[in-house]
Length: 548
Image (cartoon, rainbow, N blue to C red; front, side, top):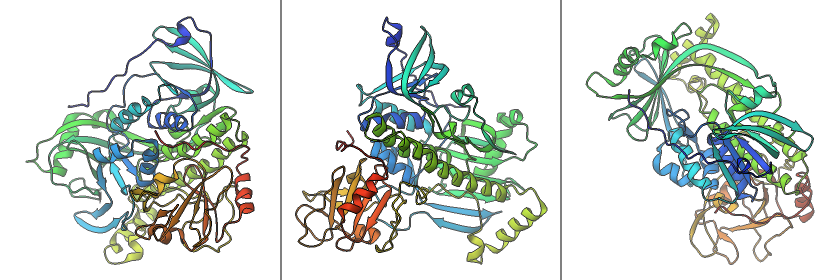
């Protein structure tokens, strides 16, 4: 079986073992997977130092998470790795669903243009980690990345956390104001703190096979219910970079996970999909069962859980890795402002409410997909069979086909941080929603994108009336947009920003640092903006920081 040769990163003796006293850091991050690395980069963009501790010295083995959604790519772009990921990844936006050999449903995840990032890319997790590690190197004074540093103990106290860390050179203690636990589904920190991880276990087993081959399958998500090549079960195929394909096979709850990983079992299954005349190599395979689970709370004093350490879902819908990156997007700016004494600790507590809502939404969608894909009762089976029978000819049935509700950003409309909408602004961008992108021309007439100009601070997004001054309030940058070339404003060259934001003259938005809408008004009102900012407990004007 072929395998991806793992990249190994150098271990260095920590300064604490070189005669230096135990030191205190603003943030310690446990886990150097995509979530932990993204958190370190995001904090660095806000000027906050962190130490990242990982018990390994390699990127992940096997492709693992491969499907990265548009909103996640926009976050990665803000962190400085989006272009590299899209250049390497396989871009796709269409999916096709079959019953047997008959196509019963197809969908397009991004039918309109005017967005920098595609609907999805497929890119192996080891590439994502490699790119994030390289990006960390751009912040040598802010990110201390420590490989083969295993956290063996955690002792929270009133204003911080003490970690016990083991290395090849011995053990040391590290004090941190805050700890971000990004150490995965088997989180050691979660276990050390004795936190229950309640959820639902699913008995169904699935085989993942990463196959290297040259084959004419399209850049689409192909899903089969009851295919002739895998009778009575389901299967999924995705193209990845480097002529690697991900094939998932449903095996049933009685499957032996050890036996099913054997090449003499895997190879015939793959040949049934690709045909006997297509040569291939097995790159990686795994048999898994899954569960949907979450911590009751994500914030435990000064320890904050993110990604799989906080919540896990089934892989159907690509909600695991994408959800973890969206956790970081929500958490890092809040943590940075608290560390810089610009906001109260309660701002970090809001992460629990907002991303807890996101986790619940992901778990609900994941559980519903699993029920549809693997019906356990006669009623569930009858419902699925009826839907699949009706889907080719009836739109209402196609809407019920559930082969994975693919990752989308959840709305934060119910959060206490949002200002209730008064309904005076047209357009879909209501408070709580993640901002839509649009092509612009900057002040020098050069092409740019709306999300790139929003950056990662509070922004007043304004469509000023003709002859009016650019609106301004303390604590915000102002991004003025005009549908006509105009001094001091970005040009909405295709009119898409105005269309997507209901950009009539005078319309003003307050955009959060995670690029969600905090509030919107039909006209600029400094007092209303100040009241909206006060919901975040801000006490000082932050610096304007852009991605390096």
